[in-house]
Structure formats: C-alpha cells, structure tokens
Image (cartoon, rainbow, N blue to C red; front, side):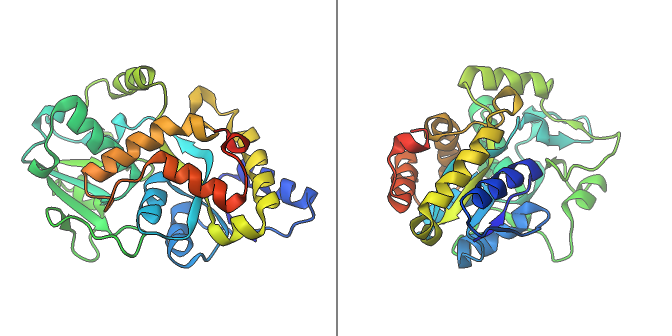
Length: 288
C-alpha cells in the first residue's frame, strides 16, 4: 500500500504498525501534503492519505470510493486566519474584497461559517476571489465568486492592496503590516472552542474503499498506531475516534453545504457506516 501523511510522527507510527504485521507500506513524500489529495480522491493514486476534512466530505458527496479513518492529523483555531492590513475590521467585510486560496479550502469554510454565525455576515455580500480550484474533479465553485487570473497569487494581491482581507493559515506572509481582522482573534477562538467543546478540524486520514476491504486488518492497525500518537496532541488538536470527530465534522459539513461547497448534505453517520462497512468492523472498533 502507498501512504501519504504529512507528520513524521504519524507516518512513523503507521509504518511501524505495518511492519509489525509484515505488510508492505510505502510512504510517499508529498509536500505540501494537500498536493496528494487530488490523486487520492479522483484516481485512488494512493491507498491511505492525509487530506482536508472538506475534501473528504466533497469526495463522499460525489460518490468517490474513499472512506474516513477517524483521526485528526491537524486541528487548530481558525479565527486568526482572517487578516487585513488597513483600518478595517470584521464588521466592515460586507462589500469588501476577500481572497482565499480555494473556495473549498477547509480554513475558508470554517472562517465563512464564523462570519455568518458570529458576525451576521452574508457571504454573498462579500467580493470573494479564489486562486485555484478544489481537489474533487466534479466540484464546481458557486457562480458568485471570482477566479483570479492565471498567474495571480493570493499573498501578492493581499500585500499589494488589491484585496481588503485575506484568509491564510500556513501561507500567511511574514509582514509587520498584517493584523487579524477579528479583534482579539485568538481569545475569541479559544472561547469558541470552549463553548463548542472541540477545535476546528482541518486534516483527517482517508483510505480507499478498495484498500479498506482488501487490507482491513492492516488499515485498522495503522489507525490504532496513528490514533495513539495523535491523541497525545495538546488541547484536543488530535481528537480521535468517531464520537470525538462527530461534532467538528458535522459542523464543517453544515458550513460547507451552506456555502455551496457540497452538492448535497453529508451526514456524519453516512461516513461512519461507509467506513465500518468497508473495513468490516463495528463502530465501537473505531471509537464510535
């Protein structure tokens, strides 16, 4: 089997579990890790793959043969990723320009959900610009967003003042002019997490339905090994098991549907049932 996982500690755990079973698992070096998602969901180019939770939801909504292993590979607060360089704040965002790498990028889905629920923002009243498409071939972005010209870059447009706001996580430039658009963003994020009881979820682990069925025992062993390492992450950033993921995945799916990132609702129990059926295990075996 072929494996793509960004974190070295999670990959090492998975490879060790495979070796203990005498199973041949090869880790592919793909950086950044989201570059593997397109081949995974559309062509099943790898068997086990770290990917954004929204990409996993889109894949399921479009009937791609992939299922969820309920492990958080990346979880973090998101309110701080909405940034600006001027005197604007979150209250000024309607009617202004906002750039985000991709409409289906999980960070953007979370932030737009916060804007709607916490700040009363109508997403359709914002001038959105995206810089690339999503990872799932069948997805089409809504007609009310703009695709940047070929060759344009989010960071450059933001720093040069062609955008009023940007949504950027790992791709945030190092520039002293940048500040969060939400006042006390990290404190707001911490309170949101305390109120909800979970961190926003970014990356999970997916497995092809074929690999899950043909190598069930090995895939479950990989899950056990990755789960043990991820569960040690601080502040709940490594939530594991179906019940731990129910809250964040359900909310991400609702936000994504409201924003036309998903073509249909994807219920959490649909994910659970597909995973268990493919692997031939009960929900309890995967923390359900």
